[in-house]
Length: 115
Image 1: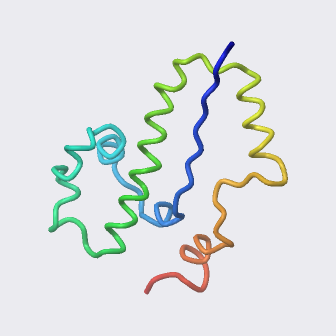
Image 2: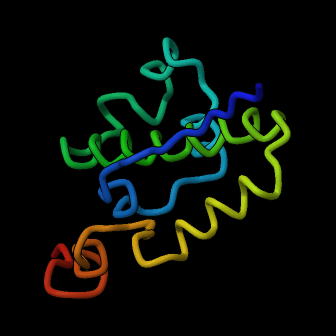
């Protein structure tokens, strides 16, 4: 019997609203052990400008950590069938990466652009 495992991550769109981070910042958020995250220079009180910024960084970190973890998951030897099934789901009528009703697009390019 072969047991298959998969993961599904549902996250806030807020991480997509955070401006680009440096490559080093992305790597730190993605790979720093959990018990060391709060020691990162970029997460110190003088660097995080407000609670929204803090929330956006945490959501970006969630996405980056899942991406980094995918490297380890990939070593399991995911089969073409598994990849095809995921592709069919994401490209089908029920799949979407960012399901926010256009809020993120409006934040960057529409009526919700911050002043």
